Image 1: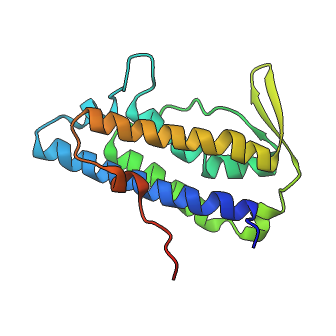
Image 2 (image 1 turned 120 degrees about the vertical axis):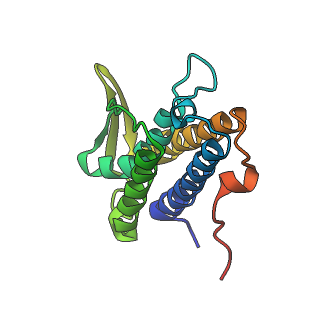
Length: 173
């Protein structure tokens, strides 16, 4: 049975966003248990020239639900809105992303196969098909930001492991 565009994207986005929500829960508990101001973790960076945790978390939603929403417009551009500044707001961002993903149907996403899609940043433009945009641009960006969020938390001493990163596996029923 071949995979559809929906099958390749939506369940993976849901699994990983759920995992990121769990990472945030552990980070918040870590702050409380060790009397660490939450902003110290929320604004932590893996290295100075990289964006902080809150941007990484925001970007997981941008490159999942936001990427799928962009299919209808045929264009995706970077999101320069400020990232949430608290654990509660970050968790709400993830919850909103999951809710948006739940609203997509397989027929809706699969109908975009073969359609033109474009990445735009100022004068810079990259042409894609919808499936190439999602599989060669959005999915790699999505996993990059989820991994970077995980790495920041590990660096800050939050007790998370591989299973926390992977989230709820989609096992045979």
